[in-house]
Length: 164
Image (tube, rainbow, N blue to C red; front, side, top):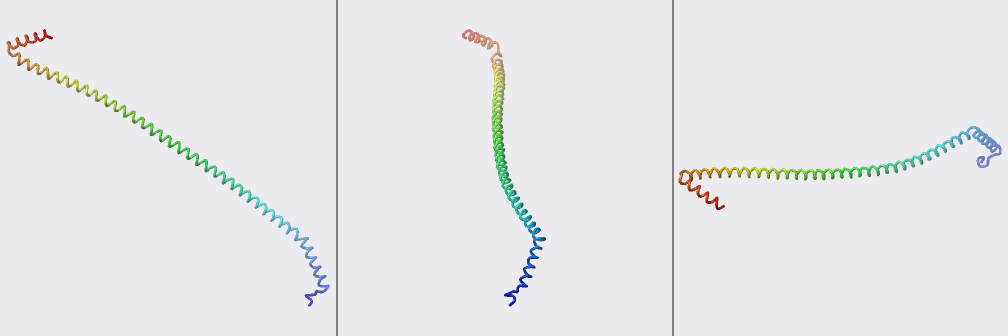
């Protein structure tokens, strides 16, 4: 029964030993414990603050990256547009040059054909003239082989000359 109803001596010694323990803890342990708890609280606050700063920086970096990505896409689109325009211009220039060259070739061919035609006609005229002269020579040779025929032919020519 002593545990249920303790004696005055036990209470006195228990209170005295509890007071000494509290005094010893207060004198030597309480300040370092409070100091370490305060330091721990400050380090946790500092870590939370740094985490908030890091999160804000990450958001800023993300926004910056998105902006850079958007600018890069716009620049890529602009470069592709310019490349298409250059390609179309080169194709158009090539088409124009090809049509001009084709026109020059056709014109040159027409001139060559005309020159060949004129040369052929000149040659043909020369051939016809040569053949005509040969035929005339042979006819005259045959017609004028005898003196009587020559005289008749000259008279005929005189009559025709007077008529013309």
